[in-house]
Length: 428
Image (cartoon, rainbow, N blue to C red; front, side, top):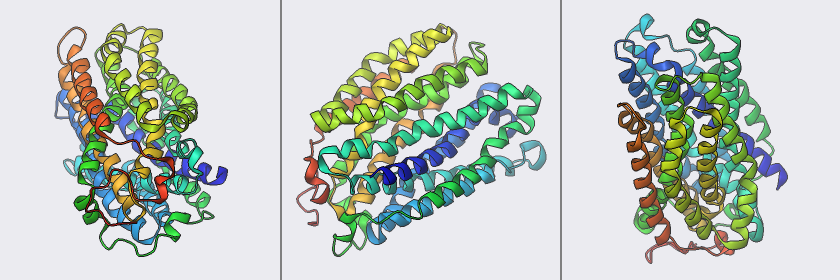
């Protein structure tokens, strides 16, 4: 289990590094380089638009790679998704700016961002199921939480590289070529991840499954559609909060409040680091008290914290901003620490890779794709952007309702039909 957890964590960390380094670049430099004919605000909105394309591609990636995972095994998914995301990320670092190739530059950016999202949409399902289907029932949330530490690790790695480059280069050097270095580094990280995964074994649940689903996505649509929609709505607030802190706040504070870029990166990274360290401890609570109660508590906490978060950000004081970010990240991890165990337990083995991944990534579309764009638009005027807090609170209430309607699975159910299956679902 230690080897499986380490390989899953490393893979998700690398893939989320690829995904997050784009978000950081979008907040800092992509607007002027690839949309120079736009105003500063419109350029940021356009850069965040290309950021959102990655989220739109993730559900499609979960369908494509979920089909592979449900028919041919969880293991092949972990190789193919990592290779695709790594190659696309390296290519982003090679795209010439608008001044060199004109409109082809943002077009290539959109295409590569789409491929990044496609690969990441498959990664989560493969990595999570590899640990969840191997783990003992009484510690499944703990072991399945290790892939969930990957996003924190990837974020810290991506922003750490950007922070080092930002501190060591002039603004002109960073905008000219420095921002490309983190993208090129993704190639080496992806290669290391692929080597780490070569010795992994297929999960026992897949080997014992029997006849696989012919078209998993159709079985999910026919027998689990309500569960998928509830899952997507429930997870939307987690994505919205995370990308508000990690992406929108970075752009807002540096452009509108005049906070130094390095200060903002340190504040955000410190909050995410604490979240990553506490992830397995939150997962242990999920093993003891159940998945759904922890998710409800975390979701309720985000609803309560959104107005304080925006108020603390508006002070432009580093310690107060850090306190706001930390509160948001702690509420977020109460939900997402147990999601990697929760979702697989809701689906039967023959459609588990597709069902769990589609619900998870649709939540990313609802909560992550539009949040930086909407938040940027809502914060156009002077004064504290209370509209952003209201928007996030609304998403939180929606997610709270969805969590309330989801069932609480039995820990042993990972090898059985999920309790959320509709009556017409095919038996395990």
